[in-house]
Amino acid sequence: SSKDIWDSKVEGKSPANNKWLHIEHDPVYQTVYNLTDHMLESLFRNGFRSVTVGDCLNDPKENWYRSVGNAPPASSTRASTLAAGTTTTTTPSTSTTSALSTPTGSLTPSKDGRCGPKFADTTCINEPGATCCSAAGWCGNTADHCGAACQPLYGNCQISSAKASTSSVRASSASTSRAPSASSSTQAPVPSSSRTSTSAGASGTPVSPPLSTNGRCGTTQGGTTCIKEPGATCCSKYGWCGATADHCGAGCQAGFGTCSASK
Image 1 (cartoon, rainbow, N blue to C red):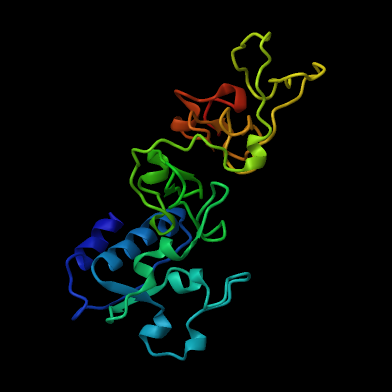
Image 2 (image 1 turned 135 degrees about the vertical axis):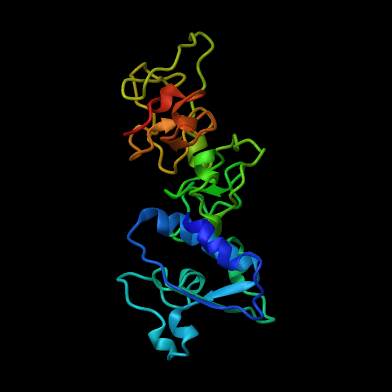
């Protein structure tokens, strides 16, 4: 595989007497979100650092990056972390410790369960029980979050033994949870599209559960539903919206979204 080819050239090599000009073409999704992360992790692990082709060839600094619309300036965390596109070269590390070796430490912690380059370069590293950042930019702790397509620059890529937090992400969400009255009977949950609930002491008028605005859902997250989350309409037993077997299978909270994988 491409990773094996890379590893055969880089793993175990000394940065004192090795450097490469490595050019990747990035129209393929897995190249951008899978192979690129593997390459960067390998470089840092073996003591190298990645630089732009212009830096490697001693071009003027103003030529190191190309304009890509709304790209951040060269001084930003994203620009300093990844070279323009996925064209990178490697040179021996200096005695100065590079921030690239611990990228999550300098990034903004996620506040809404989203992560990665498409979500303001936020990291999941401080999310309780959900420190992996999936290829689609969701914080979580399943094989889909922490496996082959995990984004290591925005969290870790090992499934944690810790359970997901049972507290609400936002205080405003917690305030919307409803306790049943003493005289009410417990009903089995039904799909969100037809589910109604009644506030304690209310007049009895049916109301729909509030929509999730932060990727969280279910009984411990203010009773919010994933039903309108694009491609992530299942509510996992840990209160995360998603569309994997871990979200839509055993433990799926049927009252707060669908329980069959999204197409």
